[in-house]
Image (cartoon, rainbow, N blue to C red; front, side):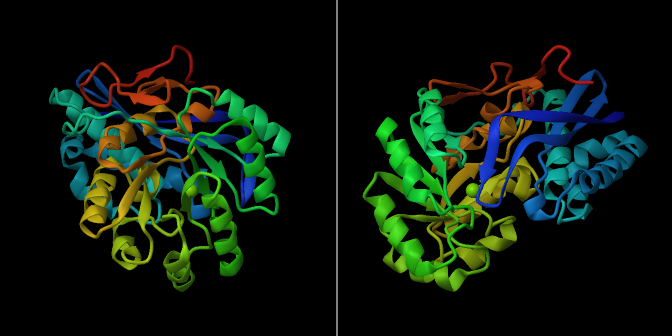
Length: 340
Ligand code: MG
């Protein structure tokens, strides 16, 4: 078994600005597993918001590499030993989970995940925070997408939405990324947004303010969806009955295996589900897309926001996800010369 850590800088098409900061590129590590003629790939789209860094990811991936190189059969038992890697490093565990599942399912000639109900997989497309005139340009670039997710949580929120509404009457979803600090003001903003064709509000207030979220939800005309407030499956009980739904991401859950369990558990607890992503290449997005039929709302656009995706996998055609035609394992291919 040969295991390689491959680093790659993903470049954003536009500067990616959220309520908490701005970035133009992402330095990620990829986990490559080669054995018996099959190659499995995983991606760690780490996020400083969750205490992750390139260094912390590398430490965890080196640990997994040691396990797999010492005993190649361990790849078949990855679901047993993976939870013993640091829980706080979910993106690194996701890389190992995706790579091992990719390898195992190729070797056993099965799809990456069991077949899910066949349905149209319409994804939202995200528009980061920007000056109103730049927002207009981004909205016209997003003409192929049926639903837009608008990042808010600024002093200019109404200007941003007014700019979007000058350009399109498409359904909108709003992600405040913890940016609204006062619940009365948050409620006023939600009422204002509801009158402008917004479907839902993601993470309106900072994490841990569940009393404020309950207060808001009693009064809000729109569903409230937790994102920063939910990481793993252990958070679900706490949020049931507080939020209307949760945003499940492979990079927060620790991979496709735990994310699938989260989608199931959320449903049994009466929570709606969004399947979301970080800025990711087609490795992470393709892995997530196998779960997309199980989510109420799909937000898998991370690979569409970068200009140098090293992989080809699930694509987005006229706003709908199309899974890889090669249905064994993840089904992704490297773009020639895209990786060192
Ligand atoms: Mg979010």
